[in-house]
Amino acid sequence: MKFKSTAWLGFLAIGLLASFQAAAQPAVIFDMGGKFDKSFNEAAYNGMERWKKESGKPYLEFEIANESQREQAARRMAERGASPIIGIGFGQASSIEKIAKEFPKLKFAIIDMVVEQPNVQSVVFKEHEGSFLVGAMAAMASKTGKVSFVGGMDIPLIRKFQCGYEQGAKFANPKAEVFSNMTGTTGAAWNDPARGGELAKAQFAKGSDVVFAAAGGTGTGVYQAAKDSGKLAIGVDSNQNHLQPGTMLTSMIKRVDVAVYNVIKGHKPGLSVLGLKEGGVDYALDANNAKLVSADMKKKVDGLKADIISGKIKVADYMADNACKY
Image (cartoon, rainbow, N blue to C red; front, side, top):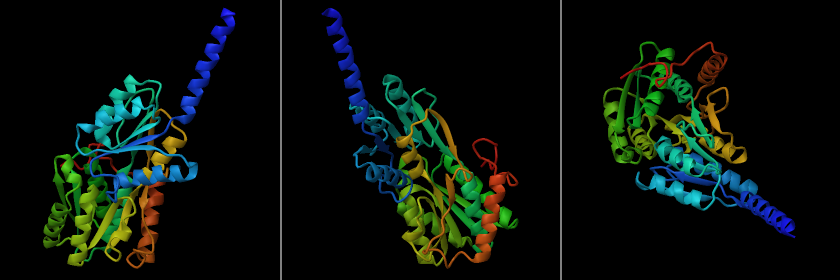
C-alpha cells in the first residue's frame, strides 16, 4: 500500500508539472520608450501579437518606465511561472541573467545582448549590414553629396548602425560627407522627438538632404523635421515608411518581431545571430516609398545585398572589428 501511495504521488507530481508547462504563458518585458514606440519595442510587440493570433493564447507583458523596474519585472514574471520570459533591449541583460540563475527551470531570452546562461537564448543582429544598404541608398538619393545620422543613446550598438551607414554611403559615393549626432547618454534619449528634430534641422543646415535615425521614438521627430524641410529620412527597426509617406526613402528593418516569435515557437538556449543572409535585417520597399526608389537604385542595392550575403563585400562591425572608431 505504501508503494502504491508513493507511486500515485509521483504520477500526480509529474501530471502537475506537465500541466504547469502546458499552461505556462510567454512573457515580454518592453524597455524604455514603450511598446508603441513605432520602432524597436513595437516590432517586439508585433511578434508577440502574431503568436497570440496564431495560438489563440494570451501572454504577459510589462513596459519599463525606469531602469529600476527591469529586475523587478523579470522576477514577477518568473514567480508567475511565465516561460519563456523575453527581455527587449540590451539594458535588460543583467536582470535577465540574475533571474535566469534564480529560476533555472524556466526559459529566458534577451534581444540585442548576449547572456551566457544555460536557460537563456540570446538574439543579436548584424545591424551594420542593413545599415550599409540604407547608407548606400542615402548616397544614391542625395543631391548634395551630404547625408546624416541621428542616434539615440550613445552606446556601441547605435555606433554599429552609424558605422554601417557611413560605410554604405561612402561605398556608393566615395566623396560623400556624413554628419552624425547622438541624442543623449541616458535612456531618455530613446523618447525625445523634439531633440531629434533639432539635431536633424542642424544637419540639414550643414547640407545634409537625407537623414537616418536609429533612435527609437526620438526618430519620429527626425522624420517630421525632414518632412518640414523637404528632405528625405530613413526609418529603423520596424518598417516606418508609412509614418511620413513621400519623405521616407526607406527603413532599415530589424526583424525583432521574427526573433520574438521564433523564441516562443522554439526556444533555443545559446546565441542566435541574424543578418541579411538569415533575413534578420533588410531595407523596406512598399507603396509609401516606391516613387522614391528608382528601378536603377533598387537594382544596385539588391546587388550590394547579394554581395554582402556571398561575402564579396564585408561590412566592418563597429563592435567586433575596431572599425569607425569615434
